Amino acid sequence: SLTDKLQNVFKNLRGKGRLTEEDVKTALKEVKMALLEADVNFRVVKQFVKSVEARAIGADVMNGLNPGQMVIKIVNEEMTALMGSETTEIAMQPGKSTTVIMMCGLQGAGKTTTAAKLAGKFKLKGKKPLLVACDIYRPAAIEQLEINAKKQNVDAFSMGTKNKPLDIAKAGMEHAQKNGNNVVIIDTAGRLHIDEEMMQELQEIKENITVHQTLLVVDAMTGQDAVNVAKEFDEKVGVDGVILSKMDGDTRGGAALSIKAVTGKPILYVGMGEKLSDLEQFYPDRMAGRILGMGDVLSLIDKAQANMNIDADKEKEMASRMKKGKFDFEDYLESMKQMRNMGGLSSILSMMPGIGGKSAEIESMVDEKQLAHMEAIVLSMTPAERRNPKLLNPSRKHRIARGAGVDISIVNRFIKQFEQSQKMMKQLPGMMGGFGGKKGKF
Ligand code: GDP
Ligand code: MG
Image (cartoon, rainbow, N blue to C red; front, side, top):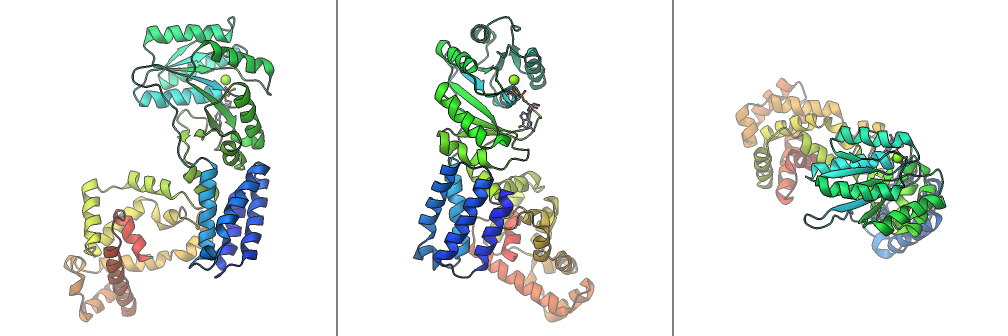
């Protein structure tokens, strides 16, 4: 996969202490190949590699402390920029005004599904959405929309297949006004390929109804085709934003990386499955992280927060203790517990930059046995000793070593490391809860 290939390139870079211009160029050549194979648009790749090269080749980077790491950082930043840097929201009409959204895209791209997914999101935000069924070519499409609307518990409007899409859309607008719907989502018919009739239908709706947002749904699995489709739709109908469906499938990443650069239109959401809850906001930085195999550090933080079973006050207290260098062995035990709740250290590490998914590597980094030793040592201390490590004189340390079943040298080393990380924490304000405590140790 793209991620595997990029990881290989980066591994070589990291392995080198200093980098020559040649090293960087070779690495970027490999990056280029990997991107092309992932179906990223050729011109986009060329421009991308040029930008990275311009920043990476130079004394600043190559004579720096960690040149390999710097190059990776530049690749990450340029990739994020390629996808638009900022998260773009669907632009809503101000105040109580109704926002009208028109879905478009080829047949099977995921318009109807995505329309219902979006309706659910609007509902959660306190809006009252209406789904309007304008696909008159596939009778099943109307039923599909209605079933999905029911699942989402939102309103739907349909008139069968006998009317023109524009007339249905107009009637839908009237219905919304009477019914108090403040978001109207018009679901339209796709075709298997770009087709004049389809474009005309969409143009006609836009010419006669105030559509505030035209959202294009493209199938991420189709790679560069998705990008070409986006270009065509934007030229013919005008697109405000793109939704990339089926990102849960075996996509090569090409569409995500090229769409913004080729069409200038932002990706707003990504479809991550068939379920109506499987729609995620698009974060260029997170996507770049995922593609580079840098793990999804941000989603890790989300996960940590969701699973944190200590309440916010306790977390705050712990952070403040850490800052004061008062993090003691009781806190250590607590943070071990939290780590378990998050799925253990290996699972956390597997999401960290540069490690992601490499189980053998993780195994070698996390010596679970050593961790078990440490926990045994802490558990062999008395509560008073945990709270006040200064009490730990040689005879107490011997008792603890016996209790934990380890050699005294291990106890000594562990306590020393602990004191060092306490000092470090004092110098590193603003770290997050127990997790920060762990970080200080490794
Ligand atoms: P439309 O023709 O553009 O309206 O496409 P549909 O909404 O009917 O979707 C076509 C098929 O793709 C359906 O089977 C959907 O369940 C499926 N689908 C849509 N979005 C996603 C997605 O994000 N992931 C996956 N795996 N399937 C999706
Ligand atoms: Mg449909």
